[in-house]
Image 1 (cartoon, helix red, strand yellow):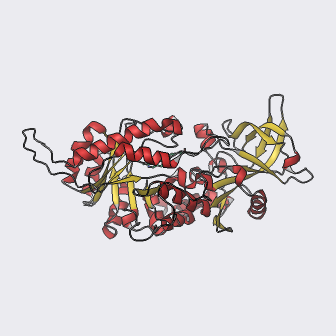
Image 2 (cartoon, rainbow, N blue to C red):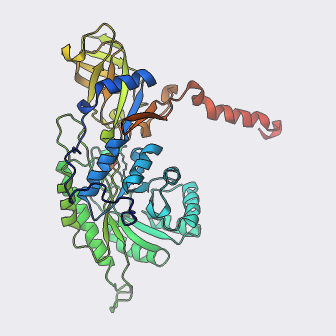
Image 3 (cartoon, rainbow, N blue to C red):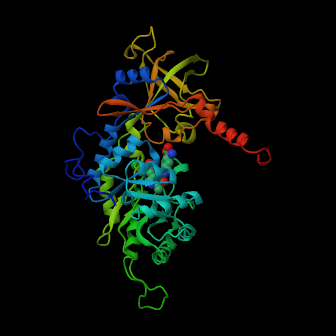
Length: 465
Ligand code: LLP
Protein backbone atom coordinates (compact mmCIF):
# COMPACT_ATOMS: atom_id res chain seq x y z
CA UNK A 1 0.00 0.00 0.00
CA UNK A 2 1.16 3.51 -0.54
CA UNK A 3 1.89 5.53 2.53
CA UNK A 4 -0.50 8.25 1.58
CA UNK A 5 -2.21 7.83 4.89
CA UNK A 6 1.10 7.81 6.70
CA UNK A 7 1.76 11.25 5.34
CA UNK A 8 4.55 10.40 2.89
CA UNK A 9 2.54 11.66 -0.03
CA UNK A 10 0.77 14.34 1.91
CA UNK A 11 -1.00 16.77 -0.32
CA UNK A 12 2.14 17.31 -2.31
CA UNK A 13 0.28 18.76 -5.25
CA UNK A 14 -1.98 21.10 -3.38
CA UNK A 15 -4.25 20.73 -6.41
CA UNK A 16 -7.72 19.42 -7.02
CA UNK A 17 -7.97 15.88 -8.32
CA UNK A 18 -7.01 15.70 -11.98
CA UNK A 19 -5.64 19.21 -12.11
CA UNK A 20 -1.88 19.35 -12.25
CA UNK A 21 -0.18 22.52 -11.11
CA UNK A 22 0.03 25.25 -13.72
CA UNK A 23 3.83 25.20 -13.59
CA UNK A 24 3.89 21.43 -14.06
CA UNK A 25 3.53 20.90 -17.82
CA UNK A 26 2.46 17.48 -19.13
CA UNK A 27 5.76 17.00 -20.93
CA UNK A 28 9.26 18.43 -20.95
CA UNK A 29 10.67 18.53 -24.48
CA UNK A 30 14.36 18.33 -25.36
CA UNK A 31 13.98 21.95 -26.53
CA UNK A 32 12.95 22.97 -23.01
CA UNK A 33 16.31 22.09 -21.44
CA UNK A 34 18.73 24.93 -20.68
CA UNK A 35 21.42 24.55 -23.37
CA UNK A 36 24.05 26.46 -21.47
CA UNK A 37 23.56 24.35 -18.37
CA UNK A 38 23.87 21.15 -20.37
CA UNK A 39 27.01 22.41 -22.13
CA UNK A 40 28.48 23.22 -18.72
CA UNK A 41 27.69 19.76 -17.36
CA UNK A 42 29.19 18.06 -20.41
CA UNK A 43 32.30 20.22 -20.09
CA UNK A 44 32.71 19.30 -16.46
CA UNK A 45 31.80 15.59 -16.57
CA UNK A 46 32.60 14.71 -20.20
CA UNK A 47 30.44 12.65 -22.52
CA UNK A 48 28.52 10.45 -22.95
CA UNK A 49 26.65 11.72 -19.93
CA UNK A 50 23.14 11.11 -18.66
CA UNK A 51 21.49 14.03 -16.90
CA UNK A 52 18.48 13.18 -14.75
CA UNK A 53 16.47 16.01 -13.25
CA UNK A 54 14.96 14.96 -9.93
CA UNK A 55 12.74 18.04 -9.87
CA UNK A 56 11.06 16.83 -13.05
CA UNK A 57 10.76 13.32 -11.56
CA UNK A 58 8.89 14.91 -8.65
CA UNK A 59 6.64 16.86 -11.02
CA UNK A 60 5.78 13.67 -12.88
CA UNK A 61 4.93 11.96 -9.58
CA UNK A 62 2.73 14.88 -8.62
CA UNK A 63 0.79 14.77 -11.89
CA UNK A 64 0.20 11.05 -11.47
CA UNK A 65 -1.00 11.46 -7.90
CA UNK A 66 -3.23 14.36 -8.89
CA UNK A 67 -4.81 12.38 -11.73
CA UNK A 68 -5.27 9.22 -9.65
CA UNK A 69 -6.02 10.60 -6.17
CA UNK A 70 -7.74 7.44 -4.94
CA UNK A 71 -5.35 4.90 -6.45
CA UNK A 72 -2.21 3.26 -5.11
CA UNK A 73 0.56 4.52 -7.38
CA UNK A 74 3.62 2.29 -7.69
CA UNK A 75 6.76 3.22 -9.57
CA UNK A 76 8.00 0.46 -11.89
CA UNK A 77 11.59 0.66 -10.76
CA UNK A 78 13.01 -0.96 -13.91
CA UNK A 79 12.65 2.30 -15.84
CA UNK A 80 15.42 3.92 -13.77
CA UNK A 81 16.87 2.31 -10.64
CA UNK A 82 19.28 5.05 -9.64
CA UNK A 83 19.35 5.61 -5.91
CA UNK A 84 18.60 9.34 -6.13
CA UNK A 85 15.59 8.70 -8.37
CA UNK A 86 14.26 6.00 -6.04
CA UNK A 87 14.60 8.32 -3.06
CA UNK A 88 12.79 11.13 -4.88
CA UNK A 89 9.97 8.77 -5.82
CA UNK A 90 9.78 7.39 -2.30
CA UNK A 91 9.56 10.88 -0.83
CA UNK A 92 6.85 11.76 -3.34
CA UNK A 93 4.78 8.94 -1.82
CA UNK A 94 4.80 6.29 -4.54
CA UNK A 95 5.37 2.60 -3.79
CA UNK A 96 7.97 0.52 -5.64
CA UNK A 97 7.20 -2.25 -8.12
CA UNK A 98 10.26 -4.45 -8.58
CA UNK A 99 10.99 -7.07 -11.22
CA UNK A 100 13.92 -8.86 -9.63
CA UNK A 101 15.81 -9.49 -6.42
CA UNK A 102 18.24 -6.79 -7.52
CA UNK A 103 15.46 -4.23 -7.80
CA UNK A 104 14.03 -5.23 -4.41
CA UNK A 105 17.50 -4.85 -2.95
CA UNK A 106 17.85 -1.37 -4.46
CA UNK A 107 14.39 -0.30 -3.30
CA UNK A 108 15.11 -1.45 0.26
CA UNK A 109 18.42 0.44 0.19
CA UNK A 110 16.54 3.55 -0.96
CA UNK A 111 14.27 3.33 2.08
CA UNK A 112 11.09 1.64 0.82
CA UNK A 113 9.85 -0.59 3.59
CA UNK A 114 8.04 -3.86 2.96
CA UNK A 115 4.61 -2.25 2.98
CA UNK A 116 5.64 -0.23 -0.09
CA UNK A 117 7.35 -3.06 -1.98
CA UNK A 118 5.72 -5.13 -4.69
CA UNK A 119 7.85 -7.83 -6.26
CA UNK A 120 6.51 -8.99 -9.64
CA UNK A 121 7.97 -12.43 -10.22
CA UNK A 122 8.24 -13.20 -13.96
CA UNK A 123 9.60 -16.74 -14.41
CA UNK A 124 11.48 -16.05 -11.19
CA UNK A 125 14.94 -17.59 -10.87
CA UNK A 126 15.38 -19.68 -7.71
CA UNK A 127 17.94 -17.21 -6.44
CA UNK A 128 15.43 -14.37 -6.64
CA UNK A 129 12.71 -16.35 -4.86
CA UNK A 130 15.15 -17.35 -2.11
CA UNK A 131 16.14 -13.74 -1.67
CA UNK A 132 12.61 -12.34 -1.61
CA UNK A 133 11.30 -15.06 0.72
CA UNK A 134 14.16 -14.09 3.04
CA UNK A 135 13.31 -10.39 2.84
CA UNK A 136 9.65 -11.19 3.59
CA UNK A 137 10.63 -12.69 6.94
CA UNK A 138 11.86 -9.28 8.05
CA UNK A 139 9.33 -7.32 5.95
CA UNK A 140 6.09 -9.32 6.08
CA UNK A 141 4.15 -6.47 4.46
CA UNK A 142 5.93 -7.08 1.17
CA UNK A 143 3.71 -8.37 -1.65
CA UNK A 144 4.73 -10.94 -4.26
CA UNK A 145 2.88 -10.77 -7.57
CA UNK A 146 2.79 -14.18 -9.19
CA UNK A 147 1.78 -15.08 -12.74
CA UNK A 148 1.90 -18.91 -12.67
CA UNK A 149 0.54 -21.59 -10.36
CA UNK A 150 3.94 -23.22 -10.55
CA UNK A 151 5.55 -20.10 -9.13
CA UNK A 152 3.05 -20.17 -6.24
CA UNK A 153 4.19 -23.73 -5.48
CA UNK A 154 7.80 -22.62 -5.56
CA UNK A 155 7.04 -19.82 -3.11
CA UNK A 156 5.25 -22.24 -0.77
CA UNK A 157 8.24 -24.61 -0.92
CA UNK A 158 10.30 -21.80 0.55
CA UNK A 159 7.95 -21.46 3.49
CA UNK A 160 6.37 -18.27 2.14
CA UNK A 161 2.73 -17.85 3.15
CA UNK A 162 2.51 -14.05 3.06
CA UNK A 163 0.90 -11.47 0.81
CA UNK A 164 0.29 -12.55 -2.76
CA UNK A 165 -1.15 -10.74 -5.76
CA UNK A 166 -2.26 -12.86 -8.69
CA UNK A 167 -1.06 -11.69 -12.09
CA UNK A 168 -3.64 -12.30 -14.77
CA UNK A 169 -3.07 -12.52 -18.50
CA UNK A 170 -5.93 -10.27 -19.55
CA UNK A 171 -5.83 -11.47 -23.17
CA UNK A 172 -5.48 -7.92 -24.43
CA UNK A 173 -2.26 -5.97 -24.89
CA UNK A 174 -0.89 -2.65 -26.11
CA UNK A 175 2.45 -0.89 -26.37
CA UNK A 176 4.86 1.09 -28.56
CA UNK A 177 6.40 -2.07 -30.06
CA UNK A 178 5.50 -5.76 -30.25
CA UNK A 179 8.49 -6.59 -28.05
CA UNK A 180 6.93 -4.70 -25.13
CA UNK A 181 3.28 -5.66 -25.68
CA UNK A 182 2.64 -7.88 -22.70
CA UNK A 183 -1.08 -8.30 -22.13
CA UNK A 184 -1.77 -11.18 -24.50
CA UNK A 185 1.65 -12.86 -24.28
CA UNK A 186 1.54 -16.34 -22.73
CA UNK A 187 4.69 -15.61 -20.76
CA UNK A 188 2.87 -13.22 -18.47
CA UNK A 189 0.14 -14.06 -16.04
CA UNK A 190 -2.44 -16.75 -15.50
CA UNK A 191 -4.89 -16.96 -18.43
CA UNK A 192 -7.96 -14.89 -17.70
CA UNK A 193 -10.42 -17.79 -17.79
CA UNK A 194 -8.40 -19.75 -15.22
CA UNK A 195 -7.55 -16.79 -13.00
CA UNK A 196 -10.56 -16.95 -10.67
CA UNK A 197 -9.96 -20.58 -9.83
CA UNK A 198 -6.20 -20.11 -9.42
CA UNK A 199 -6.83 -17.14 -7.13
CA UNK A 200 -9.25 -19.12 -4.95
CA UNK A 201 -6.71 -21.94 -4.72
CA UNK A 202 -3.98 -19.48 -3.81
CA UNK A 203 -6.17 -18.05 -1.04
CA UNK A 204 -5.95 -21.40 0.71
CA UNK A 205 -2.19 -21.08 1.03
CA UNK A 206 -1.42 -17.35 0.98
CA UNK A 207 -2.86 -14.02 2.00
CA UNK A 208 -4.24 -13.05 -1.42
CA UNK A 209 -4.49 -9.26 -1.48
CA UNK A 210 -4.59 -8.24 -5.11
CA UNK A 211 -5.12 -8.87 -8.78
CA UNK A 212 -2.73 -7.59 -11.40
CA UNK A 213 -2.51 -7.16 -15.17
CA UNK A 214 -0.23 -5.11 -17.40
CA UNK A 215 -1.12 -4.38 -21.03
CA UNK A 216 2.35 -3.33 -22.17
CA UNK A 217 4.69 -0.37 -22.26
CA UNK A 218 4.40 2.96 -24.00
CA UNK A 219 0.67 2.96 -24.63
CA UNK A 220 -0.24 5.72 -27.08
CA UNK A 221 -3.40 7.79 -26.82
CA UNK A 222 -4.82 5.79 -29.76
CA UNK A 223 -4.47 2.49 -27.88
CA UNK A 224 -6.67 3.50 -25.00
CA UNK A 225 -9.40 1.10 -26.04
CA UNK A 226 -7.15 -1.85 -25.20
CA UNK A 227 -6.33 -0.27 -21.86
CA UNK A 228 -10.02 0.22 -21.12
CA UNK A 229 -10.78 -3.37 -22.13
CA UNK A 230 -8.10 -4.70 -19.78
CA UNK A 231 -9.34 -2.54 -16.93
CA UNK A 232 -12.95 -3.63 -17.47
CA UNK A 233 -11.97 -7.30 -17.42
CA UNK A 234 -10.02 -6.85 -14.22
CA UNK A 235 -12.92 -5.05 -12.56
CA UNK A 236 -15.19 -7.92 -13.51
CA UNK A 237 -12.80 -10.49 -12.09
CA UNK A 238 -12.52 -8.57 -8.83
CA UNK A 239 -16.31 -8.46 -8.50
CA UNK A 240 -16.55 -12.17 -9.23
CA UNK A 241 -13.93 -13.04 -6.59
CA UNK A 242 -15.57 -10.83 -4.01
CA UNK A 243 -18.64 -13.06 -4.06
CA UNK A 244 -18.88 -16.48 -2.44
CA UNK A 245 -18.63 -19.16 -5.09
CA UNK A 246 -19.84 -22.65 -5.78
CA UNK A 247 -16.60 -24.56 -6.18
CA UNK A 248 -17.86 -28.12 -6.32
CA UNK A 249 -20.66 -27.22 -8.71
CA UNK A 250 -23.55 -28.28 -6.49
CA UNK A 251 -24.74 -24.94 -5.09
CA UNK A 252 -25.03 -23.70 -2.34
CA UNK A 253 -21.87 -21.71 -2.58
CA UNK A 254 -19.07 -23.28 -0.64
CA UNK A 255 -16.06 -20.98 -1.08
CA UNK A 256 -15.55 -17.73 0.77
CA UNK A 257 -15.21 -14.44 -1.05
CA UNK A 258 -11.63 -13.24 -1.48
CA UNK A 259 -10.83 -10.19 0.56
CA UNK A 260 -8.93 -8.14 -2.01
CA UNK A 261 -7.20 -4.87 -1.23
CA UNK A 262 -6.54 -3.74 -4.78
CA UNK A 263 -6.76 -4.29 -8.50
CA UNK A 264 -3.52 -3.25 -10.19
CA UNK A 265 -4.04 -2.41 -13.86
CA UNK A 266 -0.33 -2.02 -14.60
CA UNK A 267 1.76 0.74 -16.13
CA UNK A 268 2.41 1.61 -19.72
CA UNK A 269 1.46 5.31 -19.74
CA UNK A 270 3.10 6.63 -22.89
CA UNK A 271 5.18 9.76 -23.25
CA UNK A 272 5.63 11.75 -26.48
CA UNK A 273 9.06 11.16 -28.01
CA UNK A 274 8.49 13.13 -31.23
CA UNK A 275 8.81 16.84 -30.59
CA UNK A 276 5.35 17.56 -31.97
CA UNK A 277 3.51 14.51 -30.58
CA UNK A 278 0.82 15.40 -28.06
CA UNK A 279 1.29 14.51 -24.41
CA UNK A 280 -0.97 11.87 -22.92
CA UNK A 281 -4.08 13.44 -21.42
CA UNK A 282 -3.48 11.88 -18.03
CA UNK A 283 -6.65 13.13 -16.31
CA UNK A 284 -8.67 11.72 -19.24
CA UNK A 285 -6.87 8.37 -18.98
CA UNK A 286 -7.52 8.33 -15.26
CA UNK A 287 -11.19 9.08 -15.81
CA UNK A 288 -11.47 6.34 -18.45
CA UNK A 289 -9.73 3.91 -16.07
CA UNK A 290 -12.07 4.68 -13.21
CA UNK A 291 -15.05 4.39 -15.48
CA UNK A 292 -13.92 1.04 -16.91
CA UNK A 293 -13.09 -0.58 -13.58
CA UNK A 294 -16.02 0.73 -11.58
CA UNK A 295 -17.66 -0.14 -9.39
CA UNK A 296 -15.01 -2.07 -7.50
CA UNK A 297 -16.22 -4.00 -4.47
CA UNK A 298 -16.12 -2.00 -1.24
CA UNK A 299 -12.62 -1.72 0.17
CA UNK A 300 -10.89 -2.62 -3.09
CA UNK A 301 -8.58 0.12 -4.45
CA UNK A 302 -7.38 0.76 -7.94
CA UNK A 303 -3.59 0.55 -8.36
CA UNK A 304 -1.31 1.60 -11.23
CA UNK A 305 2.41 1.07 -11.78
CA UNK A 306 3.94 3.51 -14.25
CA UNK A 307 7.67 3.48 -14.94
CA UNK A 308 8.40 5.44 -18.10
CA UNK A 309 5.99 8.25 -17.24
CA UNK A 310 7.84 9.02 -14.02
CA UNK A 311 11.35 9.36 -15.42
CA UNK A 312 11.42 9.54 -19.24
CA UNK A 313 11.27 13.27 -19.86
CA UNK A 314 13.38 13.93 -16.75
CA UNK A 315 16.48 12.63 -18.54
CA UNK A 316 18.69 13.52 -21.48
CA UNK A 317 21.78 11.83 -22.86
CA UNK A 318 24.57 14.22 -23.84
CA UNK A 319 26.98 13.12 -26.53
CA UNK A 320 29.79 14.84 -28.42
CA UNK A 321 30.23 14.89 -32.20
CA UNK A 322 33.48 13.07 -33.13
CA UNK A 323 33.26 12.92 -36.89
CA UNK A 324 31.19 14.45 -39.66
CA UNK A 325 31.23 12.37 -42.83
CA UNK A 326 29.39 13.57 -45.92
CA UNK A 327 28.61 10.69 -48.30
CA UNK A 328 26.64 10.70 -51.57
CA UNK A 329 23.63 9.23 -49.73
CA UNK A 330 23.64 10.99 -46.40
CA UNK A 331 25.78 12.85 -43.93
CA UNK A 332 26.82 10.66 -41.02
CA UNK A 333 27.45 12.44 -37.75
CA UNK A 334 29.53 10.15 -35.55
CA UNK A 335 29.05 10.68 -31.83
CA UNK A 336 30.58 9.18 -28.69
CA UNK A 337 27.32 7.55 -27.46
CA UNK A 338 25.76 4.55 -29.11
CA UNK A 339 23.56 1.56 -28.57
CA UNK A 340 25.58 0.56 -25.52
CA UNK A 341 24.50 3.80 -23.86
CA UNK A 342 20.97 4.02 -25.27
CA UNK A 343 19.69 0.76 -26.71
CA UNK A 344 16.12 1.76 -27.50
CA UNK A 345 16.65 2.96 -31.11
CA UNK A 346 18.54 -0.23 -32.02
CA UNK A 347 16.22 -2.54 -30.12
CA UNK A 348 12.79 -1.10 -30.89
CA UNK A 349 13.49 1.38 -33.70
CA UNK A 350 12.53 3.88 -31.04
CA UNK A 351 12.58 7.56 -31.87
CA UNK A 352 14.41 9.94 -29.54
CA UNK A 353 14.51 13.65 -30.32
CA UNK A 354 18.01 15.04 -30.90
CA UNK A 355 19.06 18.66 -30.52
CA UNK A 356 22.37 20.24 -31.44
CA UNK A 357 23.55 22.35 -28.51
CA UNK A 358 26.59 23.59 -30.43
CA UNK A 359 29.89 24.44 -28.83
CA UNK A 360 32.27 23.39 -31.63
CA UNK A 361 35.16 25.84 -31.62
CA UNK A 362 35.17 28.33 -34.45
CA UNK A 363 31.57 27.54 -35.44
CA UNK A 364 28.67 30.00 -35.26
CA UNK A 365 25.96 29.57 -32.60
CA UNK A 366 23.46 26.88 -33.57
CA UNK A 367 20.72 29.47 -34.07
CA UNK A 368 22.68 30.82 -37.03
CA UNK A 369 23.24 27.44 -38.69
CA UNK A 370 21.13 25.85 -41.35
CA UNK A 371 19.06 22.76 -40.54
CA UNK A 372 20.76 19.81 -42.24
CA UNK A 373 19.44 16.25 -42.54
CA UNK A 374 21.91 13.83 -40.95
CA UNK A 375 22.19 10.34 -39.51
CA UNK A 376 23.52 10.29 -35.96
CA UNK A 377 25.61 7.15 -35.49
CA UNK A 378 27.42 5.66 -32.50
CA UNK A 379 30.86 4.08 -32.21
CA UNK A 380 29.71 0.43 -32.10
CA UNK A 381 30.50 -1.96 -34.95
CA UNK A 382 26.88 -2.65 -35.82
CA UNK A 383 24.76 -1.14 -38.55
CA UNK A 384 21.88 -0.80 -36.10
CA UNK A 385 23.97 1.51 -33.94
CA UNK A 386 22.29 4.77 -34.86
CA UNK A 387 20.57 7.18 -32.51
CA UNK A 388 18.55 8.80 -35.28
CA UNK A 389 18.22 8.85 -39.07
CA UNK A 390 17.38 11.71 -41.34
CA UNK A 391 17.30 14.28 -38.56
CA UNK A 392 17.31 17.95 -39.36
CA UNK A 393 19.96 19.26 -36.99
CA UNK A 394 21.55 22.70 -36.93
CA UNK A 395 24.47 21.80 -39.20
CA UNK A 396 26.66 19.73 -36.83
CA UNK A 397 30.43 20.12 -36.58
CA UNK A 398 33.08 18.10 -34.82
CA UNK A 399 33.08 19.15 -31.15
CA UNK A 400 29.37 20.04 -30.99
CA UNK A 401 27.32 18.68 -28.14
CA UNK A 402 24.08 16.85 -28.93
CA UNK A 403 21.25 16.24 -26.47
CA UNK A 404 19.25 13.07 -26.99
CA UNK A 405 15.91 13.75 -25.34
CA UNK A 406 13.38 11.73 -23.35
CA UNK A 407 16.19 9.36 -22.36
CA UNK A 408 15.45 9.06 -18.64
CA UNK A 409 13.48 5.80 -18.88
CA UNK A 410 15.12 2.54 -19.98
CA UNK A 411 18.24 4.51 -20.96
CA UNK A 412 21.02 3.91 -18.47
CA UNK A 413 19.06 0.86 -17.31
CA UNK A 414 19.61 -0.95 -20.60
CA UNK A 415 23.20 0.21 -21.07
CA UNK A 416 25.82 -2.47 -21.59
CA UNK A 417 29.54 -2.90 -21.97
CA UNK A 418 29.31 -4.44 -25.45
CA UNK A 419 32.36 -3.67 -27.61
CA UNK A 420 34.12 -3.29 -24.25
CA UNK A 421 32.72 0.18 -23.79
CA UNK A 422 32.57 1.47 -20.23
CA UNK A 423 29.10 2.64 -19.27
CA UNK A 424 28.54 6.42 -19.16
CA UNK A 425 28.36 8.68 -16.15
CA UNK A 426 25.14 10.18 -14.81
CA UNK A 427 24.52 13.40 -12.96
CA UNK A 428 21.32 14.22 -11.14
CA UNK A 429 19.95 17.73 -10.82
CA UNK A 430 18.31 18.35 -7.51
CA UNK A 431 16.80 21.73 -6.88
CA UNK A 432 19.16 22.97 -9.57
CA UNK A 433 22.30 21.49 -8.01
CA UNK A 434 24.21 18.83 -9.94
CA UNK A 435 25.84 15.77 -8.38
CA UNK A 436 27.38 12.69 -9.94
CA UNK A 437 25.06 9.77 -9.19
CA UNK A 438 26.82 7.16 -11.35
CA UNK A 439 30.50 7.62 -12.05
CA UNK A 440 31.80 6.90 -15.50
CA UNK A 441 33.10 3.35 -15.76
CA UNK A 442 36.78 2.91 -16.54
CA UNK A 443 38.57 0.41 -18.75
CA UNK A 444 39.57 -1.30 -15.48
CA UNK A 445 35.89 -1.79 -14.56
CA UNK A 446 35.47 -3.80 -17.75
CA UNK A 447 37.75 -6.58 -16.54
CA UNK A 448 37.08 -6.52 -12.78
CA UNK A 449 35.06 -9.74 -12.69
CA UNK A 450 37.56 -11.56 -14.90
CA UNK A 451 40.49 -10.46 -12.80
CA UNK A 452 38.67 -11.54 -9.64
CA UNK A 453 37.92 -14.93 -11.18
CA UNK A 454 41.55 -15.25 -12.24
CA UNK A 455 42.68 -14.45 -8.74
CA UNK A 456 40.34 -17.09 -7.26
CA UNK A 457 41.56 -19.64 -9.78
CA UNK A 458 45.24 -19.08 -9.13
CA UNK A 459 44.63 -19.03 -5.35
CA UNK A 460 43.21 -22.55 -5.50
CA UNK A 461 45.43 -25.62 -5.31
CA UNK A 462 46.29 -26.84 -8.81
CA UNK A 463 44.17 -30.02 -8.65
CA UNK A 464 40.98 -27.96 -7.97
CA UNK A 465 41.31 -25.64 -10.94
N1 LLP B 1 4.51 -3.13 -14.64
C1 LLP B 1 5.01 -4.23 -15.22
C2 LLP B 1 4.61 -5.54 -14.73
C3 LLP B 1 5.93 -4.11 -16.28
O1 LLP B 1 6.41 -5.20 -16.85
C4 LLP B 1 6.30 -2.83 -16.74
C5 LLP B 1 7.26 -2.68 -17.84
C6 LLP B 1 5.75 -1.71 -16.09
C7 LLP B 1 4.85 -1.90 -15.05
C8 LLP B 1 6.09 -0.31 -16.47
O2 LLP B 1 5.77 0.02 -17.77
P1 LLP B 1 5.94 1.55 -18.23
O3 LLP B 1 5.00 2.40 -17.43
O4 LLP B 1 7.35 1.93 -18.00
O5 LLP B 1 5.62 1.54 -19.68
N2 LLP B 1 12.57 -1.41 -22.30
C9 LLP B 1 11.32 -1.06 -22.93
C10 LLP B 1 10.17 -1.07 -21.92
C11 LLP B 1 9.98 -2.41 -21.26
C12 LLP B 1 8.91 -2.37 -20.21
C13 LLP B 1 8.83 -3.64 -19.46
N3 LLP B 1 7.81 -3.65 -18.45
C14 LLP B 1 11.46 0.31 -23.58
O6 LLP B 1 12.53 0.90 -23.51
O7 LLP B 1 10.53 0.78 -24.22
